Length: 329
Image (tube, rainbow, N blue to C red; front, side, top):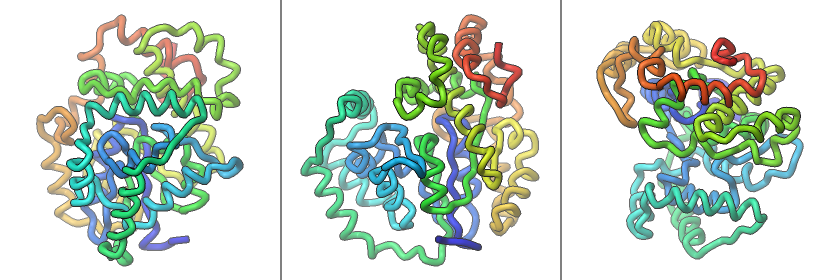
């Protein structure tokens, strides 16, 4: 179990909540190694092969048998998992003509296959494993602190904390802002209908009648965010050491808020970090982290119409979520 200055940092949240922003700022510290979304099978061929028998959002706790999930994150926490831009990922992506757009079809098919309890290991997976193990000795990160950013780990944080003891940072954002961003970038992860997952039945079973009345994608998106937030609220009752940050709060005074976070994480703060944060505060779009921060807090009020907002509220309001409670109806 790693402690002290080399204790891993694990950043989690739902897609488009600001996890990339916080990861890039923390990843600019000295003596750290940032792994951004090593579990995103849409962009990493290695992740796709290793997650053939795992859902897009793997589930895992400390009570059930989730060896596959544990082994997958064990490889990631080894500190030697190849980053998405590494030569091995480029090689595999080109070799198998890996396309992030086509991968959406693969993800949907995989979810259906897993619901039918079937899985298979292909020759591509074996090749991936071979290349991975051949290159293990190529990374020497014993003296670097590992920072992992993942937006697909929200259902297995208890397992991750129990087995790998990272400092967990949860990034929250207003649900309407998240969905507005997902709509802008056509991100399907906002609507994976996780309410159908049997592992979550105990959490949401009493709200099934209300859930069954939903029939709009925007309502399902609001519900999915609500489920994540409701789950995390319950987990935080027993995990007081988790760090919770909101996108809105960081936007208010980013330099001071990040300085405090650096101190909390025992990372070395310097003027280069201030420059990086300041340079990000400019117009931008897409998946880049350039944004005019003062425009972000209530951006959803300008980009979503009233009908869209009501549909999102309808889904988000089903569970008694305390985060952004004022948005519930």
